[in-house]
Length: 381
Image (tube, rainbow, N blue to C red; front, side, top):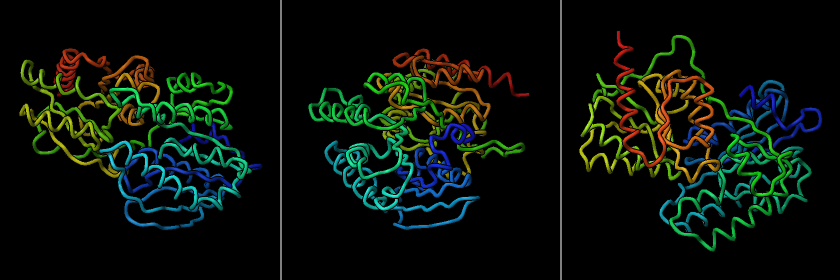
């Protein structure tokens, strides 16, 4: 959060009124909403008057509070979960949610001297940029995930609809005032769309939690006691590699020592795929739901190591934000993904105990599990 403030695009003297538009706000699970709420509070602490507009699964509400020298207003709109089964229904949901967000924020947007929006929910750019003549404030796009590129990468065949949407999206991107990207890989991707590098700033998320001295790890579930535990925490969605993990884990337990057990404290389509495959192969694992933010430090200190994955097609379009807290925990890391991803860059810079496994090489994932188990055994007094 320190870096976010030091590199804030908003000057308190000339841009006191800020509007931030995001998706699911805490306590709902969503990394973007967590980070945007933290940023909104930090900007208010500096003296900005901030309006944060987002979604809630529970109820619509408006709450105001004084924070430091400034003020924060949170506007939450109740929304149903994203329909995952159909591209058309998902696009309709997105259109409806975006219209509601802009309508709810319309007054503050007109008055704002600075506007920050993200890649979640997708396609807000198709409302905020065409309406730009109505906004007097600087428009900043924190491009957390690239859309429609993520939808295109997830499909086995090209889509005329998504191809047209991509061309229109790139048209609007070239008319945004400033961009914030989460990694060098995202900077390269955005520059390839025709956005001038001078309008792109790298501002990393950083860890949403800190690890205080004396932090107590969460207890391991009973069925993981005595094992070398590899934890995947957070969202395991369409952008995350499944096949390499599933097959490599199967080989570790069928052909290797089977000393490592996987703990999925996770949600998302990838989680369900792994659970289905592990159960079909009768492999040991533990499944639990993601924990609230206040419990995250203890959870991340509990395992022997962390797992991060990313499909090659999503490199530069998605930055797994979990990498920051995983590295800050001081635990070893296994990354299944490309050396072109900033996950690899950050892990190597951190000097962490680290194994990178290319996608599509399950034997190497099985070997990494054996190496992790060996290291874990040596560290036990």
